[in-house]
Image (cartoon, rainbow, N blue to C red; front, side, top):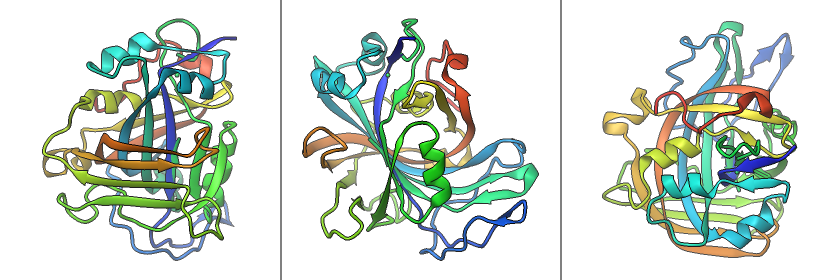
Amino acid sequence: MRFQILSLAFLVHHACSSIIPTSVKGELISARSEPPSESSPNPIASQYPNNVTGTINNTIAVVPISYNLARSIIPSQYGILTKAYKSLLPGFPKDSYPLVVRAVLDHDIQVYAANISIPDFQASRAPNLLGDGYSSYTYSKYLLVTSTNLVAIAGVAMYGTIPVPSNFSSPQAYAFTNGRDKDVFLDAYTDLLSKEPSVTTRFKPTTEIAPWPLDFYKNVTNQPTFTNGLSCDNQLDIFNTLLSTGKNAPVGVKGDIMIKAPYLPSDSTFRGVHGIKVDVAFVENNAIPCEQLKGYSGTGSGD
């Protein structure tokens, strides 16, 4: 089987909320106390009572890396949909490829009908999968995830993604946590005993979302994500709830990102990177056979 890919992602997930002990079929999931979350409540749980839903308070950045670097990271059996990302990113540098760096706080995750909830967690996730020339997927090899959230770590591993238990120094890598004029930043520590972070992000808000259009962010965040090519995480990010419209509409950001090896082949710093910060609701379909998502263009509910 030959797959093709639209985008390459690097994702960081971090838990930073006050967690109430939660039972699933009588078994305790978590009882960890964390700093209070400033994310808004899940607004769609009752609309999708049988699905996993929640919110993602996040910063999403597009890093132009060389096509050759991307090709060295993405396994050779997977093709790359160059036409797709070039059409979505007019003016993107020639011979470059979009690395999507996303720092997120998953909040108020639940299955409404079953009264199941999962503790918040934070992550950072560092592309046509089916070889049909048009189905869009995102490839993700690593996911930095809150070291104390065993549920999230196990969920990541079932896709073949390498979960990297991490500590995070700042809850301020997300949209609207401290006002629209504040800096947003993150330090992620994959060596839990080290004082040197493996990933850092530093952003300042800009006056507009540019140069990459909002439609690209909507598209790339709604592509099925895979690692082993067998099971896909089909998460639909919804951009038209109160979380991400009106006064909460996405805000442009610009700044710097540092990622150490092995999460990229060598230690790398990218300056003047553009992105957005936004809080969105999501519906998640877990462990979907990737072949069932043939024809996926990357767009989802709320586009």
